[in-house]
Image (tube, rainbow, N blue to C red; front, side):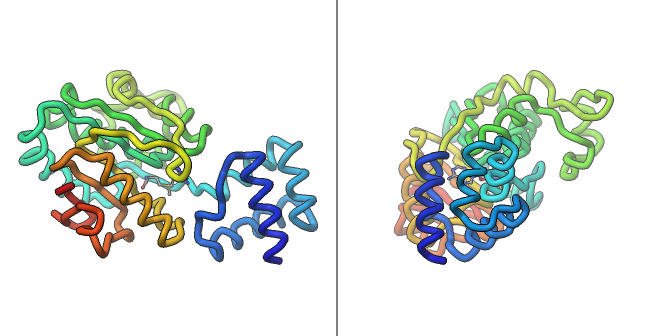
Length: 257
Ligand SMILES: C[S@@+](CC[C@H](N)C(=O)[O-])C[C@H]1O[C@@H](n2cnc3c(N)ncnc32)[C@H](O)[C@@H]1O
């Protein structure tokens, strides 16, 4: 089986430019086998051929391995802490705020940040970049259309203020949409942003192998200016922040020293 996975990982890297060997093996292999079974392929060679020639199967495979689950203000209490630190500290230290939401999925995360900044009159001082490896979610993010069920983390006031209701969806207002620069970026292969005052990367490093995760945090630290913040997911504590030149300032929030 290991040989089959080696072959398949190699194929995926060449064909789709996605390096699966950086992700935790057991989790990744379980996901591959389950989506392969759905396609009807009997082994990974046959599955590779299907991925090459069938757009639907390729999309199903990519959806399965990248996992796009997200929501607005995911872990609300942590966003509240972030808001408090930005308003009372970071925005006082820096005039301009360069913000990078990495692995942003369908945009719920960077748009939550826009709302947070706007209600504190800070949005006009911010430059917001949002990236993900998955082109499809990025296109949804740019479009900014969400079903009512996807607005779970927002109350009626925020929905009426920042969204325009249409027949079967709600669309993020143009003023927020044009504030976010969505771009494709692979955390494992591409260069990182520089001079950021806030980097948000939540619920993706949990899928990476420990040494890969450490490398990612090292690069995020290098992306930050001194005094800048790194905001990570609720299950992703950094146990040795000093090693990356970071200091913990709240649950899941670290400051570059
Ligand atoms: C579970 S979602 C997290 C979304 C959002 N950050 C949140 O916490 O709600 C994980 C995202 O990571 C993206 N992703 C997976 N591997 C990636 C990589 N190597 N580089 C950049 N993004 C990646 C996926 O496409 C997906 O949109």
